[in-house]
Length: 364
Image 1 (cartoon, rainbow, N blue to C red):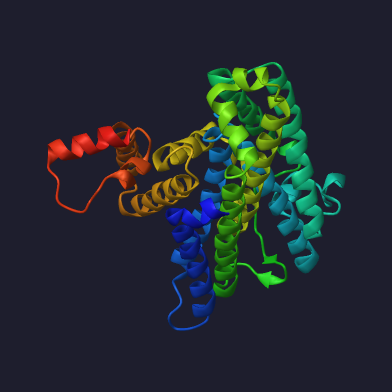
Image 2: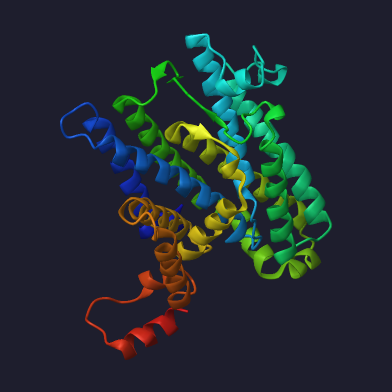
């Protein structure tokens, strides 16, 4: 706890998130409230930041790179989408378009129970733990690591994407699920609902950040770092690293699932694109830019990259992928440890190229 109280960047970020959530909540419904677009963007950014934290936990503190976290993100998203559609069906009495397209007049049997949000959350957690647990146990027990683990996680999410593209799975196929009408009895798309979702996302981000900071600062966190730095020596000393890695892997997967449940109601759609390998690669880019092994850096990386992406996609829709890619390459080349390197530089007085180069070398 003492270490946390001395972590000024962490405390400042928590204070900023809570202050932003309270301010948005108090200004809601007044003439000073933010626009719907900006409020919705803040909520989506918060969900992405939660997703980045999930990867930083397993990659930055355990040294295991996953390129398949989009799978767990999508599990949460599909569970939330199923709840929203069943909830909308209870209000409107109309089955979704993709079921009508298939000639189905009722929901498949495996949609039963998704009228209740706690049931949807429980199913999402169980499915996430089942997939992550089996996959992690087999991989870690076989000592699969490094680039080989990254490749098989990428293959896993790709297989899931191909499966969800099928219409006969009953999850919307290529077009996915959309047409969400209500959430918890509130109509979707209203200013109050958009603000509430953004506030909840910010508070969940703050809560996940506090939980992860407590974990990595504990004795368990010290064992995580020891496993990352020299797993062989740790096993020689008598520590069982299999269970430790499996526990962190499953926790990371559940956090990614939570991010998916926050994200879907704010974008109003869930489709197999969330399972595309590109998204899982992007998550690693966010963490790398912010600073791997620094929770605050992971959050800042996710917020910064996606904020620039939102802005460029409207300001320069034809060239924004090239501009964003160039910025990412530039940051990674100049600051190998992410923007954490930039924070370590002293800015008390102007510095020339020579001092800047020396400062960067010292920060490395």
